[in-house]
Length: 256
Image (cartoon, rainbow, N blue to C red; front, side, top):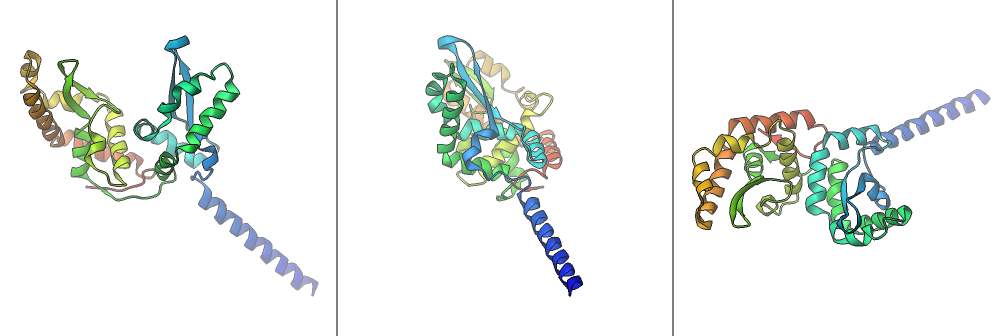
């Protein structure tokens, strides 16, 4: 009788241990503590006095090794999501006003990040690798090309290869678009020379732009740049190589 009880107890312990292992495995690599959402970021006060400002970036120093590896691998993609979808910038002045009280400043930062629920949902979908629609390679090339933004600035033609000064967000309202765009930005940002695609296509109109063009002509050049860059086999390979290196962390599939 005692032996039977002992075996039952052993089975129960084994079953409990197995269940706990399953729970731990499913939780690993995910972030469910929305009240601690701010811990996925780090901030720093730059400058002094009235010229000071707040910089915020993804933080990858988390206890979970899977999550830490993902955040490090996709740093530039997560940085794109923050810079384009977070509303924290609206609260920079009130957060900076508390810079002499680090504890109060941290609390204000945490509260403002917590109340931005739309950004939380968007960001955690990436961090927790909730899969979205796949990205065809031709669509990826079109998105990537739009990071090379030829436009008029202060009355002069210029080109921006930038995290936010572009028309990338306007390309689609689909749920998957922010993640597709973030990936394309990451691929460009990690290139040895991010300006290389533009250098390859600018030859035929560089002198024309330098001499000065009308707004309507510059708009035509802008579209031509998008078209030519999207046709570059070099950029196609960059996107494929970046995907292959990071696909275990991305929340979509690149179809090529």
